[in-house]
Length: 276
Image 1: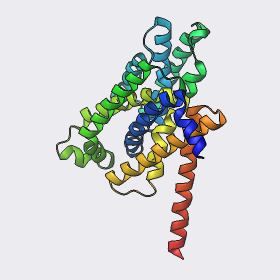
Image 2: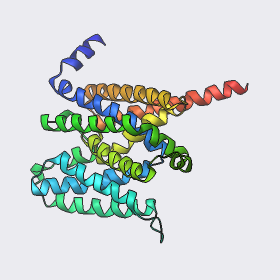
Image 3: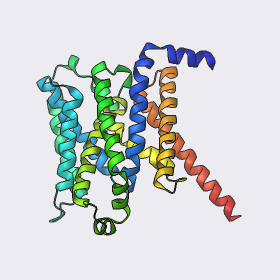
Image 4: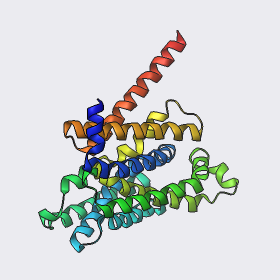
């Protein structure tokens, strides 16, 4: 085990991937609480898949990959937040429409690009092991912006999630903060693309808080537990990836799913024992 850890930490590829991966773990564990509290799981699916249009534009026009995808994801998220809830166009319907249309556009743009310029598997399923220095800078600055937003507005977003009427009556600018939340979530989705890809990003934004939800009660305890699960899943997933040559994003999501099942089973056993 000591030899394996020594080899793991001395690997140049893992050394380059470790910091971005852990930073994304901190980021997603914090946003994961808001995704579950506001019931935005399906929205993260829509925004992550819609970001393929931004990636397609970046490849076609030779633009920076993550910044272009970030702008696209934020625009899509803000459109969903601003979409009127009338005439059958609710948030779920809007997500489905923009999700399908944006992804179709991205597929067409990428299909016309030079196949040597596009790592399609990496875009869809992530590959943190190939993160470039430019990607690392964008992930760092984007993550810091999201974490700063959480420090400023987490309590307000938490209040809005459980009682929007009371939050509005207490003076919280709910309409403006809802737009900000959706925009920040769009940016967060793109920060996860290099780690888990378009297809698996939702797992990073749902599973950490889902594991913590069995045990935490207050906002702080949920955040601490979510962070612990996220860091554990990311670290163990990277070790799986290194040892068995698995895709890094899939290995991390699989480990988080294992942690979720263990949390659920432990919670169920605890409940059964308390009833005996």
